Length: 374
Ligand SMILES: Nc1ncnc2c1ncn2[C@@H]1O[C@H](COP(=O)(O)OP(=O)(O)O)[C@@H](O)[C@H]1O
Ligand SMILES: [Mg+2]
Image (cartoon, rainbow, N blue to C red):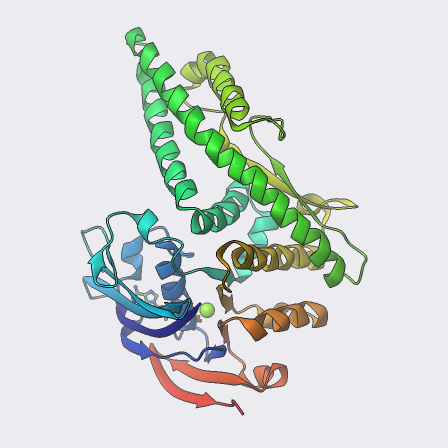
């Protein structure tokens, strides 16, 4: 999988950019605040239809303008495709694939696979459960369009249930509606949970090996699913559905008092452990960084296993924070995937590899391109 060209209009600080990256390592360098991360954000946006930095698409429209436009050509299995995204101020974004309007997000997500490494990734270990759900959901949504649409439908049903919980005290006849919604919620939730179980296992298998390698045999990292509604992992999908539905029913009385659904997959979490305990609470900064790197490397492997193709790697300002063995692990990945790095220090990179396309970014412009490929 490879990106062949990116055109941006009025995206962040780019009035207009045309960028033709190389198939291997692309290093965007320049001082802070020039627009390096903005390019990575545009690529990530094409793959997931959301930014990794903001939930508000309008923030990406260049100040003073009323729209942004992204036009990206990518190739997959040797076949070239185009994605075009326009976002106008007051309107929903419009997406086209190969010139045809995409009807729903699920038709787009998963076409361009990216794995982003950014300084904020530490949140996967140290942050709230929502940060770990975001990590898993991003991966699973790209792998499975069904997971993506199930998650969207579940979230709409959850909103609906919550709104009924607020009214049902005064309108007891709505009780039947609650029951109907819970049946549907349990149905979608069971599909989501079974995918979370399956892929947690797959990630865990990879993490055990990679953490061992990265720590010189000293550490074994485990990635453990902690669903909010306790589930026996070996039961069938129907069993999962029944367990979840029973929990919704049991919780209904207290949910009505609190006017809020307080149990469900929207509160699932994962624990990241080594043999010495949970890294969230006890890990050193170094161990936490290794854990994040391990999870991200596992993400790359999973994409390769499931999609049969190497994802595009986006590394935002992370190389300088990594020590020798972790840098080496990244180096291996970079050899076989198209990669976009950002950083301030060009000379630092010259030590890492001699086959690099360099792009100097300054004030929202690509000012210089240089290739050290031999
Ligand atoms: N909507 C926007 N309109 C214009 N400029 C923006 C917008 N959003 C961010 N910027 C500018 O983009 C720059 C930051 O770009 P970024 O890619 O994060 O920098 P870096 O090169 O440090 O990675 C800042 O100068 C910021 O003011
Ligand atoms: Mg940046």
